[in-house]
Image 1 (cartoon, helix red, strand yellow):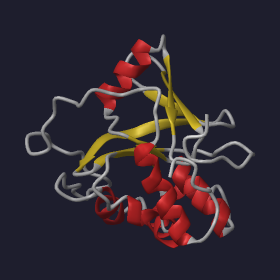
Image 2 (tube, rainbow, N blue to C red):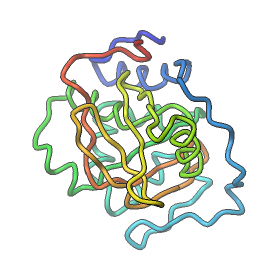
Image 3 (cartoon, rainbow, N blue to C red):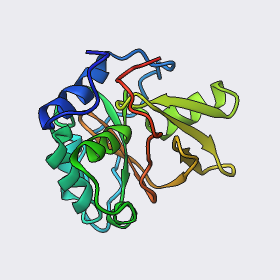
Amino acid sequence: MKHAALFGFAAGAAMMVGGALGAVSPYDPKPSADNNTEMMNPMIDGQAMLPDRDIMENIAASPMHATLTAALKDTGVAAALKSNGQFTVFAPTDAALAALGTQSKSSLARRMSYLIVPGKYDSQALLRVINESGGQARLRTAEGGVLLARMNGPTNIVILDARGNIANIAIYDVRDKNGIVHVVDRALEPGGLTRQVAAN
């Protein structure tokens, strides 16, 4: 599954993200000390995000993520985000996704998978891998590409995509039973070439 093709029908997109569970990542973040029942989740635009829901349920409940919810469902990626794996999703707002314009289904599936990093990277895990990597951490995405995480000032983490675009994390650490969601202010975009999951 590590080399599942990136493009195809909706089922292929879901398999691609699910297959990333077995992908070898250059980082193996230690589990965070948090316990979902003890930590307060941030709200998104006044809507409670519940830690006992899966990633897809919380994204669908967010008033700022109707476009992302529809795109994840349309491409089949939503099925993987309801699984028992652990994922980190950098979730662009409706306004951020609107800037991309209309996308073909295969292009959209690739973009959605690029927003997902296998494993649980809350803000503390991101800070740890950034520090351990000399100030810039490379995060392998389910799409097979790389996102870069680095500091912008003493407390703010920014995410860079393959095209050099920078997204700020507007809301950190929405904890879900199968991972973490960070709300970002820009739609992160993969590079120009087709990639495969966990391609080295």
